[in-house]
Amino acid sequence: MTTTFDVNMLRADFPILDRKIGNAKKLIYLDSTATAQKPTAVIEAMNEFYRRSNANIHRGVHTLAEESTAMYEKAREQVASLINADSPREVIFTRNTTESINLVAYTWGRENMASGDVVILTEMEHHSNLVPWQMLAEELDLVLEFVPVTDDYLFDMKAYRKLLLLEPKLVAFTQMSNVLGTITPAKEIISLAHEAGALTLIDGAQSVPHLPVDVQDLDADFLVFSAHKMLGPSGIGALYGKMDLLNAMPPFLGGGDMIKTVHLRSFVPNQVPYKFEAGTPAIAEAVGFGAAAEYLQNIGMEAVEAHEHDIAEYALERLEEIPGITVFGPSAENKGGVASFVMDGLHPHDIAQILDGEGIAVRAGHHCAQPLHEVCGVKATTRASFYIYNTKEEVDALIEGIYKVKEIFG
Image 1 (cartoon, rainbow, N blue to C red):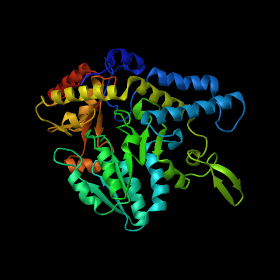
Image 2 (cartoon, rainbow, N blue to C red):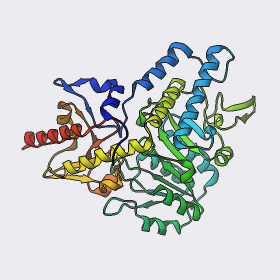
Image 3 (cartoon, helix red, strand yellow):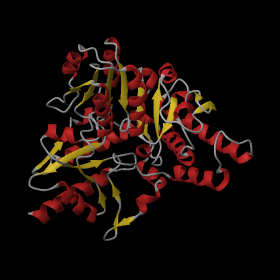
Image 4 (cartoon, rainbow, N blue to C red):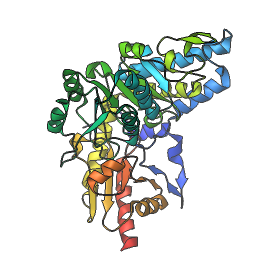
């Protein structure tokens, strides 16, 4: 696969990549699955908001308030455009992916589920798409079922079809695993779920930053994702939901701006999306979120996907050259830019610490996916993850660093 952008020119948009780490080593950032670095366009959009237009939104008629409101709502339009939502009103700003899932669990879930109802999840899920359903299951006496991972680390479609015979109320699944990199067949999963009478929730924390995601083409009921993993700021995320579902759901949090009218003993909620955006929101962060969505659209998500596939494929080839290393996940054609691995006799934290001395930032641990690591038979992995600003030369540096780890530990 080929890219349609010059990665070396694009890297100039990311000032942090010029930083020196440790012993004057230039930063090689391979931890974008945890959080992505920010381009100047995002940084400057937020700075410009604070320099010129800072004010609260929806509550004033003065110039700054109107400018601030317009910037906030423009950001909603930019995010909606990235995922091809039918209307910007179908995009609700939250704090992050985790809050978005909790919002669905505590509003739609509580209204529509009862004792004995089934929720289908997968063994690949991040804790954020496990714990809210575990909590709701305990509260409402729900049944949680899990689609296993195949021997080659793919979504087990045969097992999924069998689970659908249980007539679940909801299927909640990751579109791309943050550990394995596995890209799940989201459109087919959703279609089969709808045939079984279930709604669907896609955890798009890893897919929206890295793949073309079209909620209308997927026929997604809910999609959740975070700004900080897609070049935007932390502290803000999004919930996409079909309008009829959002209109039927009760409010999540109570307070300012989520109301139309309030009396001493009652209130009438606001319209969607404001019904779910209680209190003063993260306005500057929304502006940054919108700028990040626009930045990615200007590159083109097909080009983003192609570049990352190229880098990931090369990384897998290089990693497989190293004796004593085991990489978890499917082959390159079925995964995103993630490579999680273990090395014989070495703890992932030791590997990450030595690589850091070489200026290489990777992740070590269970990556908020303990059950998946149990399935893989390990407690932790070292994870290198790639994004639009990474190069094959950086992969080569990672391989050299791993050989240095082997040399140090004999």
